[in-house]
Length: 326
Ligand SMILES: [Zn+2]
Picture: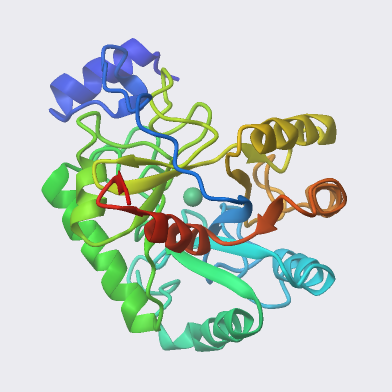
């Protein structure tokens, strides 16, 4: 494993690219003075990364390729028990997983490949019956600009123009599939250290992005953006991620209490895979999610409303215009 310094040297002098934000110790950009955006409610969003037509047996991240997959069944159980939930899926429109790689058919896991039509129709029927939003998680999830490491960070080595092209392709694929995403999250969180990805997201017409966890994306190396409230950054709204489904339940509860007291936004994040990552939608994490929803219902029935990011975006858009309060 290369040390960070050696990696930085390799990126700057061999690849001749900007280092991604996660390597830039000197980047002083901060959005911490941006006004926290609020409405009269505290919203709770459940969101998953990596939904794609990838089958259950893949060793890679991303799942839900069949309605009979473990994660699909768990999602259905969750929705049947709590039909009022909002779920935002950051979907990969043309996943290129390393263990099911079709060299001569890169379209295999494309959402517009006719072989995935049944899968697509299943998601459309779910959206017709429940509050489910499909947002963009790039195109391929993988990057080829740096073959040595961090292959899962699709946008880490793309400059502004390349990002715009990739985001346009993403939108094109979603539109072809019959979706109209207004939100985006960068696969693997990372982005070019000039942060031109944010401009590209705004310039291609997205309304919001989820570009930060506690230590990922905009908050890599140091905190640059609010962890508990949405804020405007460069013309779009950034929604933070602030609760992981693999946390101990007491930590989840404490964080919810804190966010409610701050009139913030509760964003519960997991990966739509069974067991690949610690915050996958495993049986254990599923049960914790159920317990979390019950806790919010019991403790904050008057305060907290379940929603998708798109729902919250439309509430914020109604209150704020062009980055200013109306
Ligand atoms: Zn992802």
